[in-house]
Length: 218
Image 1: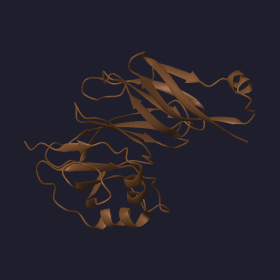
Image 2: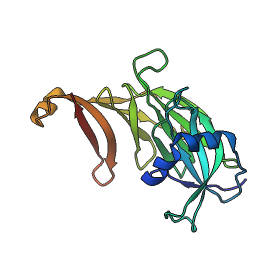
Image 3: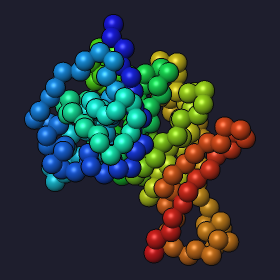
Image 4: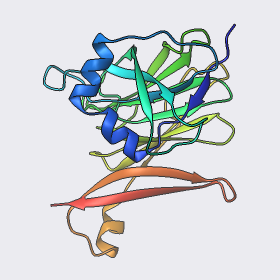
């Protein structure tokens, strides 16, 4: 079994370049082999006919060692997994799991988005579906995995809420155990009168506290 190093996709410059339609199109048509000890970059996209994308794509990172510099080449490896609107990804490098939001306003016939779980194939780097769960809110746009890898938080942009989903040892997502809804009262106290959206969520390891970033639109 070959070992694949995983580069977490949290690099703004690379994301901006990779998510362009031309690069996604190249990843669809040009697929290279994945050699052993490769550093992989997984890229989430918006899907649909207009966006010319089918899901999560992956690339082989070529740079100076594993350092991120301006002189970086991303070799397209093709489609890693087909899934709707995986606009944000979270990776558990220890267990070789990848989680993606499904930024939609409808999931399995209900007015909510979804969260998808995948295992990372050790030989090819492709993503193997594990399962999907409702994010308990519309248009989830951000994920945060706790340090133990036992819970993942989903920020639902349009609903203004954060959901907590348990993660089993094999990467299977459970139904949400808690949903925190941003209160209108908090919006009034902050001086904002517009519609509230949760754009990001994070967990402070030293205090076990949840922090959420919200924005207001009128």
